[in-house]
Amino acid sequence: MDVGTIISLIPKPCSDLLMKIFSIILCTFLSVGALGQKTATINLFNGKDLRGWKILNGKAKYEVKNGEIVGTTVHGEPNSFLVTEQEYGDFILTLDFKIDPGTNSGIQFRSESKPDYQEGRVHGYQLEIDPSERAWTGGIYDEARRLWLYPLEYNIPAKKAFKQNEWNKVRIECIGNTMRTFINDVPTAHLVDDMTPKGFIALQVHSVRNPEDAGKQVRFRNIKLQTQDLKPSPADDSFVANLMPNTLSDQEKKNGYSLLWDGRTATGWRAPYGKEFPANIWEIKDGTLTVKPQPAGAKHSDIVTEKEFGAFDLQFEFKLTPGANSGVKYFVVEEEKLKGAVIGLEYQVLDDEKHPDAKQGAAGNRTQASLYDLIPAIQNNRGKHKVGEWNLGRIVVYPDNRVEHWLNGYKVVEYQRGTPIYNALVARSKYADFENFGMTEKGHILLQDHSDEVSFRSIKIKELNAIP
Image 1 (cartoon, rainbow, N blue to C red):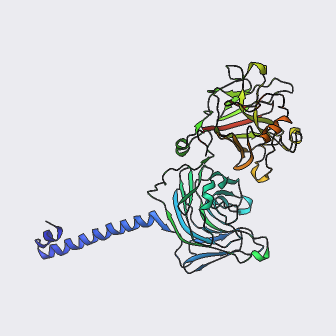
Image 2: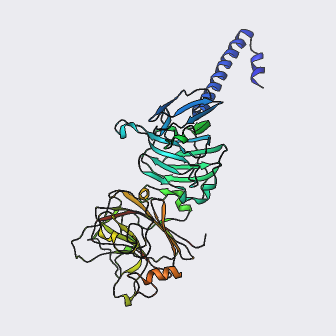
Image 3: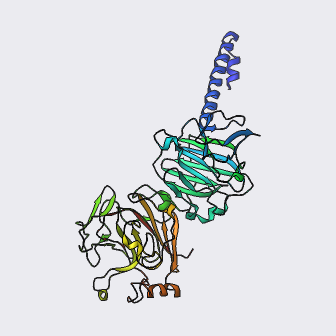
């Protein structure tokens, strides 16, 4: 028997009262449901005006036309930002954008503007909008702070996601320490970081240097924010830039990475040609592996992995002290004929400004991230962090002997072992007298003690079995 039948059997005065009560309850239930839906998904832009937003830093022009926010460049103005008045922590942001060629833009998230930080300059995470040939749309830039955190050199296929002269769909997922971006449903960036857990959202109009670039526009529409019942997109195989020390995200594990140093003990590491870990030289403290400074002429105490590796993707963070020298060697062999010498290909770790080794060798082949004494790293000052700050190094060795050195998201060295060019480089180097230098099928990975204080952390590796 339904509610209407039951009420019809009740005397009319009572039934009228029950119907009123039932109506009130029903309306309340529907209102709560509607309110819950409104709270979970927010329209950040009402399509009519800029209510709920404010402009910071520059004086670029922002206006509403045809249900779109239109930002227009103004010559002589710094980067301008249309900022939400509210801050948000965990959310999924979706919107559409369309940009004129020849300019640049971005979408800030978990960002801030504080009087005590560069006089209120907007800073924080930014989804890059980059219609240039570089094609880094969807990468993550740290505006006015650490600069590039996830350039699209980490995810080459994603460079094709952006469509010039068309509307592009953006999705930004911020859930806990994980931030992921998508352009037109293509995964573009995957960052794990905890520097700023919440902040405002902002639409950038970039500064322009040339007067003729004034008047270029970027358009935004359908700006929606979900704040409840957040469900991340399924895991994929894209590279993860994990800035949380000594950790592996679920996607990194899925992608085959493991910690080469656990962040707490000396497990898996020892002295070359030995069994013990030189704890008197290497200090493990607060998640950092640090070689202590030694007096000039002291015997070096490198450390190597117990396991040998062939093809692999190795990541590590390193931090220099002023004038310091170190290195990460790979394909290191321990052979009786070497009489205790520790030989291998080396990713140079060096203070280029203060250590004299940077000016030795040939053509800068002893500078930071170079293949030591063989191939110089491409010099890109934007890729270098200051001495005393953490740098992200990466060495990729493919099964076909192609090798790459990376520094803070930039590929700075590329070569192939065993080629005539490689052999010629070895022949003119300090390794010329070592037979088949760097050509062993497998070898240890080594962290170098050069008597200077240098720290390492977040050492992780993925073994590669197939040629991409």
